[in-house]
Length: 173
Length: 241
Image 1 (cartoon, rainbow over the protein chains, first blue to last red):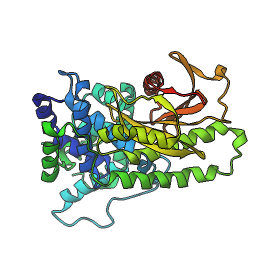
Image 2: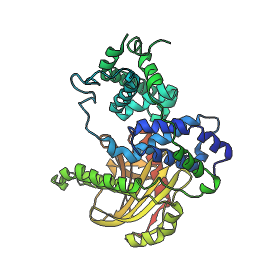
Image 3: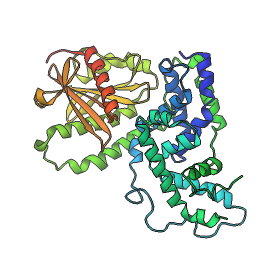
Image 4: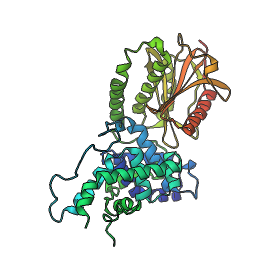
C-alpha cells in the first residue's frame, strides 16, 4: 500500500497529468478518466516506484501506456495526407480574426495544429517542451532511444511550422 | 519580452517557446481533483476500480469495429496458406475483446475463477494468478476460432495489458520446434507484427493451444513479454487430454 509521502507527491502532478491527457486525447471527454485510471495504477504498483527517481516521469509513462492500451484502435485514423500534413495551402483562417481576438484564435490554432500531429510526435514535443522533462526521461517514457526522441521533436516542430505558416506570417510584426 | 512569433524560424527553440507561452494549460477540474483525492485515500487502495462507464462499452464497441474493419477482408484468404497467421489474428482479436472485460474488483476475478475454468472446459490444475508485476484483471470462458476455451487478462505495472488464452489444440499444428524460439526451458512460436502493434507467443501444452498476446513490439518489450511467458508457463499445469 502506498505511503503518505508517495500519495502526497503523486497528487502534486495532477494538473500536469491532466494537461497532458487533454492533448493526448485531443481534448476528448476521456481525459479525466484517463488521469483517474493512471492514479489507480500508480497506487496499485507504488512498490515498483524507486524513491529518489522522478515520479513525474513515472506517472507520465503510466498515463501514456494506459492511453495506448485502451485507445490504440482510435488512434488509427486516416491521415490528412501521407505524412499527416494538409496537402496544399491550408490557412488556419478563412477570414481575418476580429481585433482583440487574435490571441484567443492563436491558442485555438495552436491546439488544432498540435492535434494534427500523430501521437508519437505530439507526445515527445509536449513532454520535452511543455512539461520540461529531459530527453532521457522522454526516451524512458516512450521506450525508445534518445536519438529517436530528438528526431521526432524536430519533425514535430517542422510540421507545426508548416501548419501554422499562414498565421505566423500574418502576425509577424 | 521577445515575441515568440518573430523567433519561430530563428532557431529550433522558437516553436518550443511559442508553445510554452501561448498553448493553453488545462489544469485538473475540481471534480477530477476530488475524485482522485478520494481514490488515493488509504481505505480505497484495497479495491482496484476501473475508470467510469466509458471503458467497457467503448472498448467493446471499438474492438468489434476493429474486427469488422480489419479482419473481414481476410475472410477470403485461404487458411491453408498460413493457418497460423489466421490464428494469431484471432488471438489478437480475443485480446482486444478482453480489454472490455476488466473487472471492477480484482478480488472478484479470483473468486469467480474456479467457475470460469469449469465453464471453459479447460482442465487446469494450477494457473498463473498474477504476482507483484502482473495483476489478473479478467477471466472469461471464450470461443476462439470455434473452440471453447479460457481467456485471462492481466495488466503490468506500466499499464501494458496482456491476454492469456487456452483453447483445445486438437488439429492445430505449430511449426516444427526448429522454427520456435527457446524461452527459458520451453520452446514457443513468437510472432511480432509491427504494423498492427501486437506480439503473440504461441505454444502447445498437454494438447492445448496456448497464447500470450500484448501490444508490445519493440525488442525490449518483446523480451519483457517473454519474461511474462515464463511466469505464466511456470505456474500453469494442464491435465493431459
